Image (cartoon, rainbow, N blue to C red; front, side, top):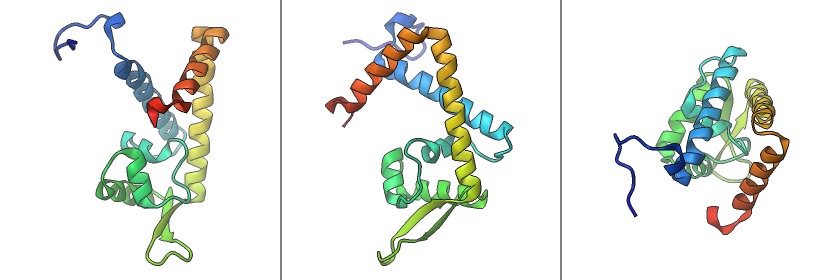
Length: 153
């Protein structure tokens, strides 16, 4: 199998599944961050999406969050520190678990997460209008099948 070279023109129909999934996901992330900033949730950047994506960080340990995001614990702690400094979350001792820490959204963090969900619902409305209700439902059904399959586990 050959792969397109970095600087060679690629026809859209030649794109592999990785790009077909990544490009829309990145566009969604950029939109969420933009709309959050416009709504007054200042300071949020694309790296923060590692914590604002489903299922969110509330009640999780930093190590679990790092694993979900595919980044080091050190990198996750920097992201957590950034969001803590912006007032979106706090880290506290886990009850009955020694030195373990857990992450909790603050009131501001919950509001930002709720706004992100609102933006996602708007994006779904836009995609449904663009693709048509039938094709959009099919897209979601196929993505659910992949989600529930062994392909992503």
